[in-house]
Image 1 (cartoon, rainbow, N blue to C red):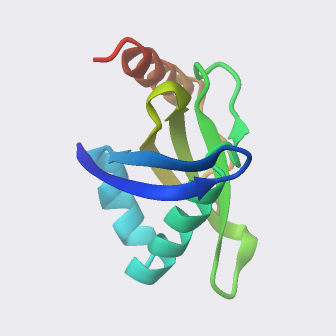
Image 2 (image 1 turned 90 degrees about the vertical axis):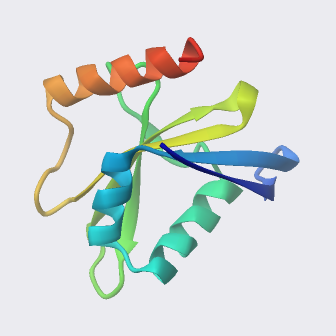
Length: 124
């Protein structure tokens, strides 16, 4: 996993040190979907409001954030699946995909995300 820290103002929380952790799968996918500059804009947005994504049912608390692609808007954008561990200020970036290829996670993908969330909560 790839990790890095940011000290940032967080919506409704004041300044807080947040820690991004990317899975290798996420890193590969996001590099295919966003330019470096667009990814930095995404990170800045998520840092300012780590609970911006909607909670996905049956995933143990994982969230889905809709992110617009330049000139395509949110409907033609990407979806990023992440888990925010508030107690440790950690944002786990788990999965990303274009909306044009998939609307929602499958039941199998939800089960995998739930497993990730449980492992994260357990500190593994």
